[in-house]
Length: 186
Image (cartoon, rainbow, N blue to C red):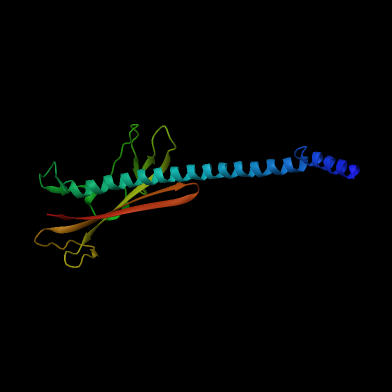
């Protein structure tokens, strides 16, 4: 009986000695996988924050041009004849950057070509991405609200519709946002 008690006591001591190498390696691997998962979530959240910031910046640009479209005078006096002449910003044409200009907070002015107005989205100290803003202006039929190719004047003048679009690429994905507004012109 005494001998069996010694065996049991030795077995108890062996089981209380600590972790084996295999157990330690498995625990280390599980911990490493957890850390890598947290790191992957942090990278994805950074990408989403960047995308959101650029979407907000693009939306702010669109709202700025829509506001100009709604409140600016549509004509200026022609310097030679003195007669009203339409501003380029309001002349119906295909989607271009005609009549648009933009200067960011760093003082960089956007450039206009046949594709539109080219600007940088984002602040100078952060990640900036190139974007293109286009505008499309068309006449609206005052009775149906459908776009037309010519002016249909009513008692209040005629209606103009402006669609402003910003396009840019983030992480290899093409992003597009548009804003359409309408106004009356006399």
